[in-house]
Amino acid sequence: MQDKVTKINSLEARYNIHSCLENIDKKDLDKSLLVCNEVIKKFPEEPKPFTDRSLIYILKGHNKLACNDIKQALRILNNKQKAIDPLIKYQIEVRDASCPK
Image (cartoon, rainbow, N blue to C red; front, side):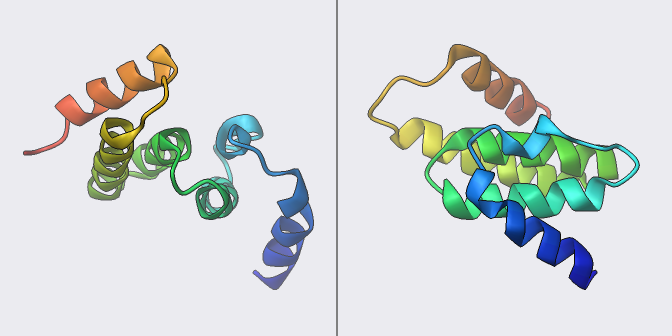
């Protein structure tokens, strides 16, 4: 585990808004989740990393956590003053519709 954390920390300088799913490995979703957590720390006011992490949670079978991230992404989306990528907005709305109310 320490090796993973060290490796993740060494990559931190290269994180960008798209890093969550850039190198997703469905055989090692925990690694992708660690990357995504760091991206969210770096971009806490952007909906995309939450949307991306929700997909990882779905793949891991953690639907409640996925819905929590989608709800957070929706809150951010609704509070944004600038334009949001229409595809990200659509993904958030579709995933939110599948979450329990």
